[in-house]
Length: 218
Ligand SMILES: Nc1ncnc2c1ncn2[C@@H]1O[C@H](COP(=O)(O)OP(=O)(O)OP(=O)(O)O)[C@@H](O)[C@H]1O
Ligand SMILES: Nc1nc(=O)c2ncn([C@H]3C[C@H](O)[C@@H](CO)O3)c2[nH]1
Image (tube, rainbow, N blue to C red; front, side, top):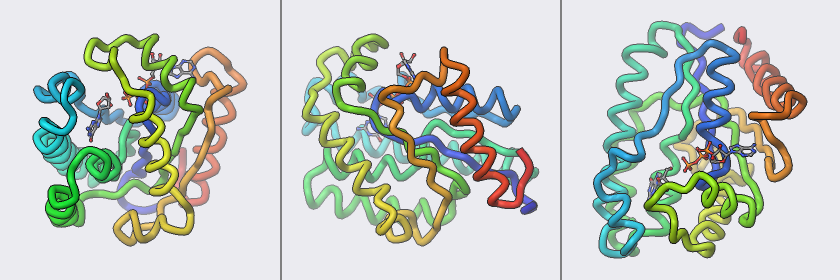
């Protein structure tokens, strides 16, 4: 078992069920839950009204918040051999920024991203969730966050496509700063981790297997 705590991240497009699954897993394993900030981002509702105009501020805010959260989690939790389950991976900054920034902005943003992310803790295991766009749109509508009410189906479609690109097994090492986390890819279009015990046991078992592979204890 490594000296540091195991770091597990859940990723996938908007509304796929990251926070739901991260909460279930952190309760099951009794690990620290790291949740992304959402409502605290002062640009998000303006961003959804005018993506081009507010993209740079929005992406910068998300990036620096996540950098701070991950620095804190390294100092206060992982370095003390405690495990963490996070409802995001910092790679999502690149995935979103690649869609929302113009070419020159994205080029500069990537330089800043690389500078900061190099020193941050990297997850050992990533659960990558994906679902059909129809299902994502339905979940987003059911959750009914005010700033997501006009969510563009094409935006969700493009995001899902970008996620597939970033999580393509052939480009993992390149896209994840040279690291090779264990990736558990699950299409949860027809799974319900929250209400169906069999589905919940299925995903917990997958994570337990990955932890064993790392030589750790769940
Ligand atoms: N397996 C599931 N079956 C049915 N509904 C689900 C399931 N998982 C999550 N939900 C519901 O879908 C909505 C989105 O879930 P959640 O907030 O966990 O997604 P998320 O990926 O964290 O979203 P975001 O990207 O916006 O942070 C919530 O209303 C949640 O209750
Ligand atoms: N533009 C942009 N960049 C990000 O890094 C990012 N991370 C999350 N989000 C949006 C998606 C959900 O509406 C909501 C909750 O995930 O916040 C983001 N939007």
